[in-house]
Each structure stands twice: as structure tokens, then as C-alpha cells.
Length: 394
Ligand SMILES: [Zn+2]
Image (cartoon, rainbow, N blue to C red; front, side):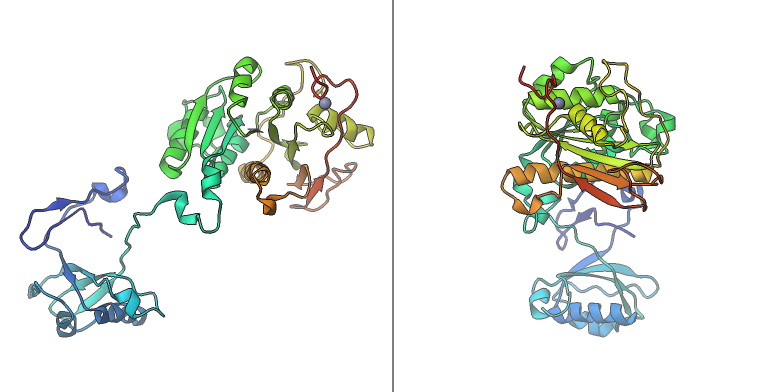
């Protein structure tokens, strides 16, 4: 395995071609000079393609005859690597995948084709623009509240969808016991979770701008109000019913769509709720109350209690893969919501409230009566309840 880090033409000056990124594993490898590049006849690249397919070497003379100029014989014992460039090769052989670059190990006994990878100058989401609305996505801004195991995976997924700006809000630091379920790496232990995710996305998804806000959503509700003005949607993966209730309230008042994701019943169910700031759609508290009135179980008891008195979801009851799956579903829901609003009718969702059985428990009342692992159910919205301090205008 090697990479080209400098090249020259004839006896001309050596031009460095630095390897990116700077921490690429080959950057710490040995350097060796004396390898060559040639212009070549397109037939040579057909020969390369065929020899690779048959796992065979080529004759040195046949190889030499296809080289345009500057030929050098290999040493009698030893070898050199040659990169051949034939810009007409792809057009001459359109039916097979023959590229303009090929690589070879050249010895006196024969020439062996070597795999070569040429990195395109076109990088990032722009490569997907024929099939995905990358430009629209680049204009979208999402506030992610809670960067735990669900929120971290959701942030990654949002960037993978090409969301232009992510505003990450979480006051917590990554701790050693988080690693078993979090997308963050061991070297991030002790750092703010928002900074861990920002660093990961800077390396993996350079199209996405990430801003960090190490705030608690309840204590800093006045600041969150300001942030909401500048985003298209808020995705809440914060743990605890109080934080979820606050996000439901603030998003509605800011007239923003909100997507809330959590696991329920010790990891038995995953849930993604979409809250719209519309007059006939109820907030999170109204939704839970309406479902309870219909005979369903209230999976979030204490949601309507005062700040700080609600129960916190018990930790470590779900496995990381399930939490990441839920985070990704929440991101998918968020992206669909924003795109549909911008006219992408193919992004319409089946409902406003997704239930996903992760390890279903038998005996739950509807709508939580999912019995098969992986089963999903989409529910419609429910209306606001009279007197709700969130749903009724202030
Ligand atoms: Zn309400």
C-alpha cells in the first residue's frame, strides 16, 4: 500500500502532492523515490484490466511497446512501480470499467498490474446532487438537544443527509461508562459531548457546519428561545420528561416543528414523536393525556408535573445499536419534515408518532401493543386539550 506524495516531469522540479488528511495512516509510512509515471496507449489499460481479471502478469516487451516515451528498463534484480496515464482509455473501452490511470510493478521478468485508486476532486455531498436535494439540505439548520447515545447518532445521521448547519445543545461531558453506547470514541472521555460530536463531524462530514452550546435546556430556556428563531426544526433526544416537556413548549411557542425521540419501558419500545405548531395538533403533554384517556398506558408518568419533578429515564436499559437506530429514525423524520415543507412531496411520512418495538413486552395496551421485534406503528396526531398552557395562545 502506498500513496503518491510528490511527482516530477523528466528532470524537472519535484512538486509535492501532500496526502490528506494529515493523520492518514500512510503519512507516517516510509518514503521511497525512483518510481515512474508514463503516458501510455489505451490498449495498455485494457491489458491492465484483463491481467487483473485473470490474475496474470504481462510481458515486459508488450508493456514497453505501449509507453509513449521516457522508457526506463527495470534493474536486473529488483523492480519499480509505474503509474500509467491514458486519458483516452475510458472512451476507447466504454463497455468495461477501464480508467485513465493504471499501476504496475515492473521487473525484468514481467509486469504485474497493481490496484490503483484515484481520489476525485469532487468531494462531499455534491456527489449526490443528481438524486438528493443537496442544495436545499445545505440551507437547512437543525437544533439538536441532548447529545447522548440517541442524539449523537441523530447528529451523525443529520450530517449524512447533508443538513447545512447543526446547533448542538448539551451541558454534559462524555464519561467512560457512556462509551458502550455512545458514538463518541474513548479519547473523547472528559470532553463536552457537543465538542466530541463536532470534532467527529468535522472529520467525516465537512459539508455540515456545527455550532456548540453546552447548555442545559431547562436552565437556559431563555437562550434556547433565541436559538429556535434561527433553525428550521428542533430534534430533542434529551433524557428526562422535564427536558422533553420544555422542548415541546418552546418549539410550539417559536412556531417550529419538533421531533422528539426516546426509549420507553426499559428499552422495550422506541418512540419518535413529531410535534407541529398547528392549531389542531396537540403538544407532548396533550398527546400523552389523550392517549391515556383512550385507555393506553402512559409511558411517561410525571410528564405533567412541575419542572424537575418528573422521572428521569432509567439509564443503561437499552443497547447502543437500538439507541442509534432510534436516533437515525428521528433524523430521518426531521429531514422528511423539513423537505416536505419545502415542496418535496416524496418526503411525506405515514403519521406523526412512530412506535418501534425493540424488545416488545407482551400485555401493553394499545397503541403500545406491539408484539414482534422490529414492528413499527405510525399514529396520527391528536388535538390540543382545552386549557393547555402550551397549546393555547399566551
Ligand atoms: Zn398541549
